[in-house]
Image (cartoon, rainbow, N blue to C red):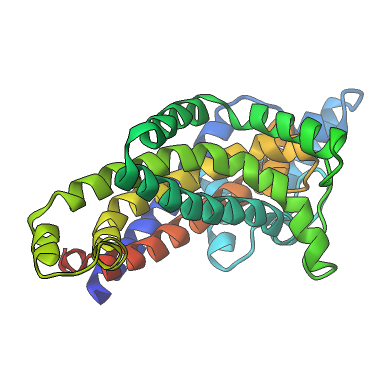
Amino acid sequence: MALFLLRRLVAGVVMVFVVATGTFGLLSLAGTEVARNIVGETATRAQVTAKAHELGLDQPLIVQYGRWLGDAVRGDLGRSWFTGASVGQSLATTLPVTMSIVIAGLLLSAVVSVALGATAALRGGWIDRILQIGAVLGTALPSFLIALVLAVVVAVKLRLLPATGYVAPTRSAAEWLSSITLPALSLAIAATAATAMQVRGSLIDVLQSDFVRTLRSRGLGRGSVVFRHALRNAAPPALTVLALQFIGLIGGAVVVEKVFGLPGIGSLANSATTQGDLPVLLGTVTVTVAVVVLVNLLLDIAYGWLNPKVRVR
């Protein structure tokens, strides 16, 4: 198991490096004159040249990237070219907002998916058909449209939850939960549709396997067979889908944060991309990929616990 996790960790570090390098290369080739954007359109050429020299933009790309990478390895992600704010501090402020709605959406999706998928697999009939239709609709509807509907209906018309804003859990746990409920629900609906169908299909296959028939022949009750044995064997494929959904939820959070006015990492990345603020964007991408790697590593641990065969691969 240790070797299995070590390989996953090394692969994750390589992925972070590759994504960061690719991001730097793409932004460097974009042709945006960042120094001009910083000093303004009315600045003279001398002022633009001075700002470019101050930021090190007149140096070769390999030197610029090497300097950033060296600082990043030591934990220094630099400062914003436009505001001068520490990238690390900005991420420490915005990342918890995004992770709150993403993790809440993922957990909600996991719980509801197991309930819906297991019910459809065991009952079949009209319940199964409704799930399949709902899965198609949930997958087809974009997160921003779901977010807009929830904001208008639940927040504006019914006034059950706040439409915008974020409250830190350290300030008020109840207000924090209220502020993330609608954004998390917006992200969870599409993820639930795909994951519930995976749970349904996996559970149907497991229930038709030989070991389940053997357990039933030994007199085990249906509840024991399903919840103690079948669901555990059906869980690994669903975990794989959840790992993929986590990446999609982070991408969907960029738009959802805009709808609900949340100061998350998506808003930070969007503004950095528009301005060409390379340190902020590199820091955002690097930390986001690192979080994805960490979550996938945790899911791999859960996968290995559910399926011991994976531990030796």
